[in-house]
Amino acid sequence: MTPKKTAPPAALRIEYLPLDELSRWPGNPKAHADDAIAASISRFGFRDPLAIDETSGRLIAGHGRLTALERAHAAGSPAPQFVQVRGDGMWLIPVTRGGSFADEAEASAYLVAHNRTSELGGWDEGLLADFLKPLDEELLSVTGFDFDAFLREAPKLPDTLPTAPSEFLNDLIAPAAPSAPAAVPGLAPAAVQAAVSATADAAQHALDAAGPAPALGQPVAPPPQAPPSEEPYLQVVYVVRKSDRDLALEAIRKARAAFSVETAPEAFMAIIRDYLARTGEVAA
Image (cartoon, rainbow, N blue to C red; front, side, top):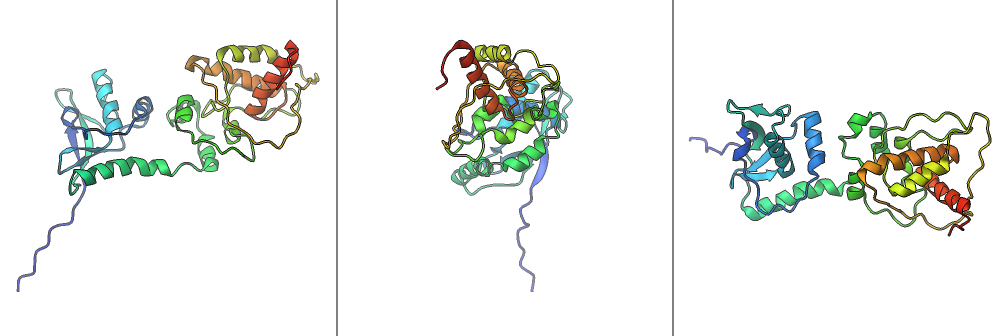
């Protein structure tokens, strides 16, 4: 008796297809951080192939990466690592093939799930800090944890927290304030600092308020302190121009040293209280 033949199991494969022949899934609802994607591809190469639904022949995963490639090619940029170049200059993009769906409804559900499931996981803040601490400024800049990304992606913090909302980020921004006045080291990479920042004018006032670093051994008068309170912490975010970010961070750094406080939120409040004390106002 002849054995019954069975269909071979489905297998995925990677093929290189011309950039200008790739077709998007219509109505894709996912928004993308185009600049962050482009920076990652430029730095690390194109390591994550696009994916095509064999039934429709359209892209089912990788729309943001496709946009980044199209813009780079149109701008005349060199092909990223792992992207091949055809004789006529067209880029050949690695694409995962071999997968298909029963119908467009199933494919659409996969498109949403493929994006949404990664969003649902969130981050372990302690492990994330451990990952980011050793990275230099150049590598930090392509992780996606910058000023704009933090404001866009950071989850809403609960009303009551055991420590200040941005506490776990402080070690990534600047070293802890010394116990006695000393020379302040250079500003560390900004990483994900932005939860506490100031407008350009407020930042300039902060630099003036902090003043020159005190000489070694010279006592520093502490700023007016708020009375102890059991009230909950609340997240306060001020949006500044990208060009003003370094000014705001420098003000926070100087205030941490000048007022001998450990965290960026404490430095921010010390600047406010010091300014109000200098102008004769009363802090709320």
